[in-house]
View: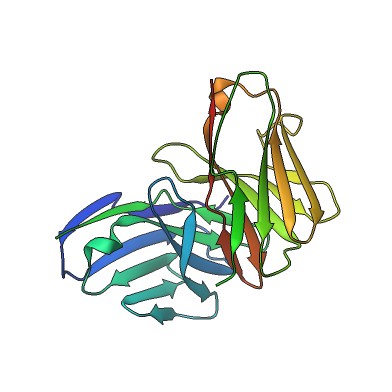
Length: 110
Length: 113
């Protein structure tokens, strides 16, 4: 069964720092990997989707990479802002369903 | 991106009553929708996969008679929590897929008193 782990569980950084969130998964036979953002008490907002054949995706200050063979993905956030404070979830998808990590709670201090 | 609307966002109900949660894909058709449950400070747990026009597929350990799922159209799936008890209190989130990407509703905070 696929298991997804996210490290660190929580991260606090000063505004302006660049940071990296990590996601690892045990089964490399994935269809795609998606990064989400969740604000307290809210649903999930899709940030980036990486297909299994791709190695990275970029959107604005966000860059996500995927190394299927090692079972790892990273989400890089450049020039962090207080508005980036949220919980970040990664999810890997096999043919049928998503498997979620437990998330990294990010706090960006002004 | 595509929009998934979930209603209600919050509901408080008495123990023993039933509660219905709706999930709509507003600008696309979704042949498959997913229902998740999220406990405080934990990740999402898949409860069931809902396919339009057919019975839902439930994950192991999820009571299908307690969590009734109906996917009556390509834009609407409903989750009914029957005979709710306080332990059913949780955050429920639906998801719909278009192409390779999944989009999520805003979630429903259910409190059973």
